[in-house]
Length: 245
Image (cartoon, rainbow, N blue to C red):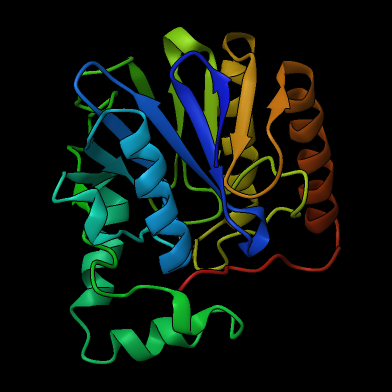
């Protein structure tokens, strides 16, 4: 079921870790951000989109972890975008002979048989200097950073004042750092600073996992996550890289 967050911005929830797919309505069709997770849920999402009377005209993956790069044949062959670094990470994975085994190793066992791999990770990288998603709909600014995963991007739907945060500022998960990065703690602090910089332009934030929050909750989550990462910097337990490695 789709729930409206702002004009032309709707959320579809998954049973897995309260995952959120964001549907943005444009002039000729919809943009799907991070659709997931099971075949049944994806088919249900396709049905709900058809009920809107619009086709899927584009997709976007906020980062290259498995639960953000799924697709379903019912969405059609619309272009699926990500940052250049996101696409490069996926291309490197898909070029290995054992990529399916590697992905299978990080899937949750209770959902593994229901997660479609047929169209997994087929992301087109946008130019490195791309500031917005190229599509015929509301202006969506790309806020790329290096926290959590290489090529991660939050999306600011500017006219709707909605921030699609990817796997950041969740109210159900603590920060997961990219331990493959040269300086994951500095990367995370820098990303939170970027989120601080757009907070005045946001009335609603949609995390990749968890509940939709208002402007005040966004600032609270930024502060909480900053305190968590500061704890890691001063000697707490390390974060987890997550994803497919």
